[in-house]
Length: 587
Image (cartoon, rainbow, N blue to C red):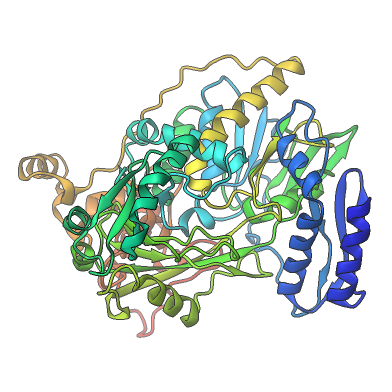
């Protein structure tokens, strides 16, 4: 208990007796009230640092069969700095899923939930995924840089390290099966000081030890491969296992393939409460009815700790962290980067970010970012001028031609870290029919396929231990993609248009998206009926004009396909509106 005494002394000095710590059932709880969110996060970090031994044991024991023997830091400090918004919930109220008794209920439709759902569909099970938003991949899974990490700054032995390696190795096969674009482009970590070159060669032994393939690239070859780099960069470490994927395309593809294999997805469905008893979840209450699952998988992102609390199994805390990215016009791609480039020093350990980079995406745009800013708001997607200017300035150290005149759009995501800065992937600690996939921040996109394999296996084991069989299904791993007319040869394009004339009508000129592609996106296994939903699937509005020309045409197509008035078509679901009514009578 010496660590607890020392921690309380530090908290007393730092926060003038406004914060106290106590331990219960292996968890360390922080109590009190502060008007500074940064102060609350600092208190959580102090707690983790003060109990290093317990934290190591907690992370080490996460995947033991009985759940972890120790708990993490649970930060209950009240924030009085500003009024907090409640979780956004759809206004929809019905009984669409009321009374269902799925074998497995997955909470959360991000990359973690969708890959888990697909992996579960390999077995003959009744599987249901609930997502509170109107579509899959609406939060962090559509608001990140799409990088498949090689694992450069992950502590060997951590769960991030383990699942990053496992997930990275699965990406080629996964994306091939789902017909999702994936480019294993590699990553350059650049250096300007020529005196460091001997050290780079010595470092190769370290990279071999941690299992990350690497080689040294000197200036002449480096600038031939990446002509957009600053002339002052003299060498780089090249990591060939890095790559890029479209994160929302992959998330949606996993969901579609799972549905094709018998899984169910209920959108606009928020978990509002649970009934528990005997150390188990008996019922899960939503705005669309109450369900009675045998197993619950918590993949709720920034709300994972709140789901854990509903189940009586909260032993960690999420503290949201914003990250902003910027997208540049395609015409600057060759001038800036062909792969993923970053410079040593752009990563901030203090901010717990990998530092991002200048990334050539699978769609041949340039993406730069992200930064890392702690925030009390779990759904604060606002982009600040300061974040974008900081990001641009940071990466001019790598690419001299980078400037704000090349920007076409920017976006912010909210990560879901725990104070231990590792993944929480384990069976429930106090709840026997719960599995956590929480704290999934970067490199969560890379790790997700590996996490899904383990979580699905645990769910099957738990069901079979309870007397419920989970035999293999007639799983079909192949998911056909929507044809993209611009990527076809002249012969393929002519044949496609002959088969379906709508593919010969280009509605989005920036991204060369046809009418046929847009209509097909509205007829997929995962429902799509919004402007942004179509945008995520086939990219109208992703180009230079950002939907200024094609937006009205997409809106009209959705209305026609769904048999709805124009005013009923939303931008992104929920209460989002594009039109409110005619302005010139019946014209």
